[in-house]
Length: 104
Image 1 (cartoon, rainbow, N blue to C red):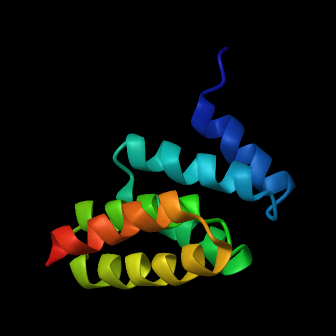
Image 2: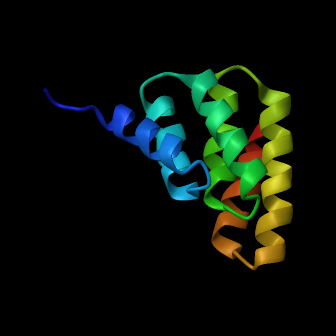
């Protein structure tokens, strides 16, 4: 019996909840499968444990937008801009600033 990617990622996170890459993968897998609330919860857990995981801010914000949570998405983008500025990650900062601009 084949094991789904979602099940593999859930198992990886269960074995090592501090594995930021696995948690990011799980959040993305939930999001891609339409599980927006589960994805948002995983992104939130990821950023609480590893607030410097810059790549998560954009996708977390996008997930919140898809779930109709525009104000929360705006706050995630703003926090991401702060983090990416501090980290010197100009590419990620630019994406987040663009997303903020689109929100108006």
